Length: 71
Image (cartoon, rainbow, N blue to C red; front, side, top):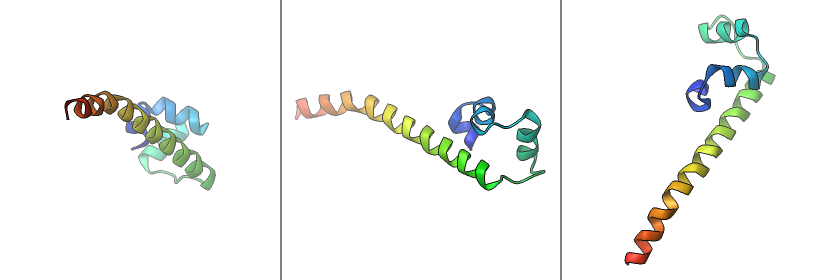
């Protein structure tokens, strides 16, 4: 999910300060996230969602303006 929202595994890896091996181990289920890593991942997901919501609002605003002008 994090990779889908962030856009790339590299972005997740860099944000969480993980090595390539650590990231592969997490994806393979060979190890679990530490509490610090979980916090970093949660922060990344919240930030990405915030950005997506802001982009959607920018896209919807002109549509709303046109709809209110017609009414």
